[in-house]
Image (tube, one colour):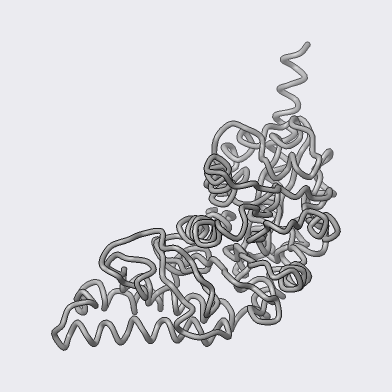
Length: 384
């Protein structure tokens, strides 16, 4: 039996979206910046994609800028705002559990004269609003907090953060890669100034993402060149993937409620079975305010990579955390929640879709239990 439980890392491209994209790879392959009629038609389709995304998000089409990845979008948001507003201030606020594309960018900015406040989180991975307020300075120019964590699935109080940002005249950037189609968000009500979204997390193509930039927000370009994307993000557009991204965003948001209800039932079934059947297991992240597809479990005495490796041998594909941080160190997210290093390393992440069946759930939990029991028995024998 083959079971894919790593949807936070990437998702299968929707077949209908793939079919649409093929037209712009094989037949209508033209450069949208060229002058002949066929190229102009491709340019029109690209703009229709921007409109499609804008309608889904509830914003204007000239607030949507295509990028190659959410990593690029996050880099652009932080570096672009830092450069643009450096004369106003040099202070940025983020959290300790952001994606590496935000944290590493913040480290880069620190080397270039910026002060970064890394907000702590509680045991569930939620930032403290009072700590956020206390950390604001006259020099603060940007708050960057993800909507939902990619490892433990905890959902942040984005609306409240947005209100705080607006009251203090500070720009608010939100990494929404895991939350689109999962969390009820509203760009305007949440006072979001910039937002990053990735296609391959929502059954769209890899290599296609976007940065939402609120109209009137000034930002320094990250990539210079031919002047595409309103002269803010140069480079020939990946037309097929941008079109695919637009349909993925539209579909993710329009199908969100029904899909999330199904996933919540399946998620809770897996969590309850593991916690009951596997001794020494612990759920990480918020028990209620979490993504509908996220299960992050630590299991005493069994290395997470060992467990993931052996699950793969029986057809179950999962991870130990972020695909962008696959080194040997314990997860910075789990450590920030107060989990000890030993338990943080004994962690697996299962991220599901709404197609999962009870049969597959039972198969998954049974194999986790079997591998854990064998690993513990082997450990006891080796210590005798």
